[in-house]
Length: 283
Image (tube, helix red, strand yellow):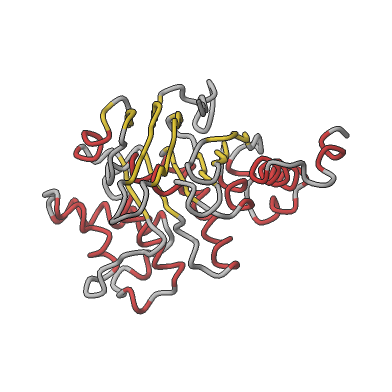
């Protein structure tokens, strides 16, 4: 069984469980004459309240499938998924989580303000309260000066910040993110990683983050969960142990501890020791 237990004090230091995945399997039925596909097999995972956990593994290993199960956008073939002690469906109906994808998914005919306030509008919040909340969120993501702009007037990174603001609109205790920076250039991507560290620290939300990038996973996370090729299993977990979020800025990317942890994740991902890592870790 693939088991990843949450440490007693992680992220915000709480032992409350944000996500509990228990013995989950996801089998996709055969199409036509093809054979069935096992996307996930016997997956156990816990994420603590306020903890940032990244899922990393080769393409097709089930990272996004696992995220979709947590979000109740798909259902497991067997096993259970709970969010803050509730079935995933109940958590979705209670708006306990926000979600962001690789594409920002903004409505081009709505302004930045109107895009961010959309979930609040759909759930009946009055106009004044919506505008107050949107003002807080745009300040949080550094876009107060762009409230009246439209998506086609924004850069890719700015569009993603709008999408993150929208995902936080209803003050969720959990943020689910599926490669939100994957389509950005490297400079913008690193800037957005810095922003996400700051936003996570300020909101205290737990985060489950899917990525293909080892440095990104290490920079952002309290723990990096490494998954196997299909059928997806959790083969190991690497705690970052890199200190408080305030330390994680551009200069931290040159820190020896950062490079050591990247090497450890790469070793677990590829299943073989990375040249030099043993000697470095034993110094």
